[in-house]
Amino acid sequence: MILVGELLSFAFVVIKHGIFSFNWVYFGSVSFLVQWIILSSAACLCPLRSWLGKQNGIVAGSISYGLVLLMTLIFTSAGLWLMHGQQIRDNSAIAENLIIAAIFAGVVLRYFYLQQQLQNREQVELRSRIQALQSRIRPHFLFNSMNSIASLIDIDPKAAEKMVIDLSQLFRASLNEPTIVPLEEEIKLCQQFVSIEQTRLGKRLVVDWEIDIQEIQASIPSLLLQPLIENAIYHGIQPLPNGGVVSVKIVATASEVRVGILNPSPVANHTTGKNSNGMALENIRHRLDAHFGDQATLELNQENEKFSVQLAYPVKDLT
Image (cartoon, rainbow, N blue to C red; front, side, top):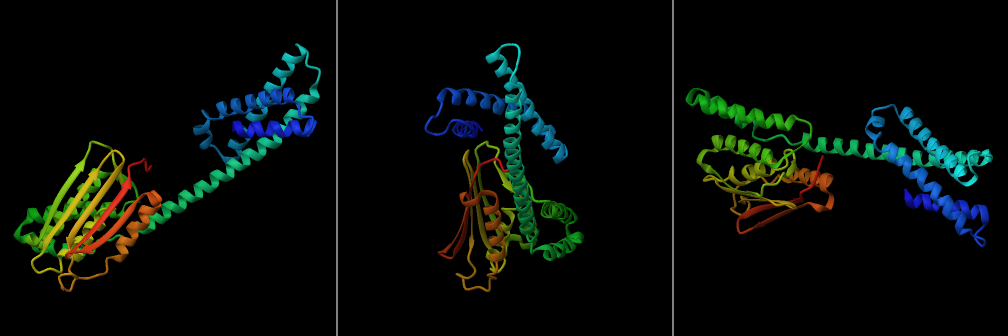
């Protein structure tokens, strides 16, 4: 705003005196007046920002516009009074400054309004995009889990009850609006999912957790890790007759969160594993891009009969 004010003052002096007879003293006085008007208007508008945001657009715009004109009137009158004494004779100077302020304030406020509208639309589109991506994430294990619950009701009612609670927590998170959650909450949700799968697969599934969170308030988009672990179990463990181990390593530092998931590769073991996990990974890639842009990475690697997923994103305020 200071830079724009200086450019405005320069243009005003050039129009008044021309470029070859540029009056630096006059430029200083005009610049002084313009900066007082701009900075005072900003100082009054900033504390009112929250209140103006709750008002109708026309009301908020009119108040902002009127405040700029009021500041122009006050400082123009004060300047004339200091220069010419207590009696202000040159009313035309006040009218001239008010007209100039009215034109430029209208242009600037209109620009800010359009910029805010564009930002609001981008935020709405981003939320809609994230919601559409998350709405596709529906665990494949629903019917298997329900069958497992039905079989456990007579054999082990407590295990069946725990499985129902874990399943309800998972689907509550899946059906909620896309939100930003603490990393610890997402890890707990993943552990509940693993508990359900361990009830269904028994000793065939072993999950090795390695979690290192260095006392920071790391956040993560909801249901970002669960589909990765689900893929590891569904495509890596379930097709193997003897099962296997899924290794989950999560490290959170003050600047970055890194996640590594390692599971057996059914393709490498020549089993009939399903190789259709591309949609979930692509959804996660799009969600990372929506939240972090090119600052986040998602790398896939397959070697030595193992399939690994490496995820990293910066720690920052996502709200």
